[in-house]
Image (cartoon, rainbow, N blue to C red; front, side, top):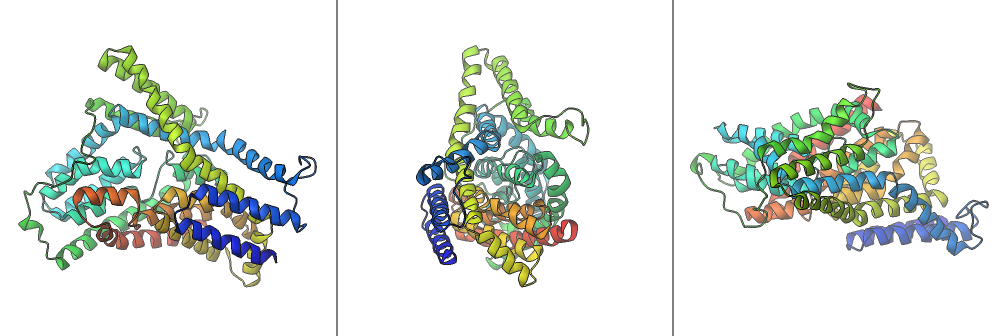
Length: 458
């Protein structure tokens, strides 16, 4: 009976996500339903006797409150600080300044497809510091896209490179990486240095080569010859073309948190630690000081803090609340015994950690394509990984790392992803054509990630 209920609820969750119902509400209601069934079936109490309110309905919301309190005060604050920082850097023009400076060195390259490959690597480098996939995509459409088009690169090839710049969400300041590190019991810097880098560097090599050959192949099939289009100006819509012009020195500001976290870690200075939140706040106040010098207005410099706080607030519902609701759902699956049943079945069939990793990666990948969001897909299902990893006696990070990479890769091959719709719209290219241009490089990246994760960590 319980198995039937679990399958029914899971089916409704998948249906709700596919139909674009609010994922937070879908996961929260599903979690409460499973907790209620587990309680009334005598399988598992909603809360331990010493913590129970004495009334089952109240207990359901006590569980919800407890997860909210735990997540919002720790991981939630970290993610909100990252979002607020990204908003503030864009507000003062620092992100735009970083992108402008980063793309300048590539302007002298004369070979079209070499330019395309180099632009991809430059864009990935910038993604370490500009953490919004859509925001970075729009900035690159203003700065990098015209350079590529001037060398005769087709609009589809150029956009295909730009939208994959955030395909791996690497670095200790990325939302999914922070969440994955927390679920793995690691700090974000350790997660980045000891695990992410070992997979991402080879993935970048593979993806760069695939971009070079795949985009050239697609252009040839479409009859596009770069030599015939050299000197063309990029024809774009006005959307996303405006940016705040800040001094070149502002380009250093988005780099500061990354630098602080690298320096004050086991890599350089192990005796002093700096958290993500402290690094972000310190840089925001440094940005306010820069604004004071530039504008000579105390009011203007101080008012910028509002953009930081607004950025924090905007991510609370879409991301932090999603984490809480997803954890409630995961806990309900454990309470009703679904996770244990799945693991016992896998163990009895002789299926190991590698197979379960593939299952979870497939789940995340499919959800990312359907939802058009790497964050929503990963945050919805990543909480299941630690229990699965513990059952098979492997570190949680060995499952979470490929899942995290698959979530952002899946977003990059989704025609409804915001970054693809926005960039394709500016270049006047079909989102489905962009997905065709990203599909092969991203497939190569995912296969590389799975192979290296198995070779290095499992």
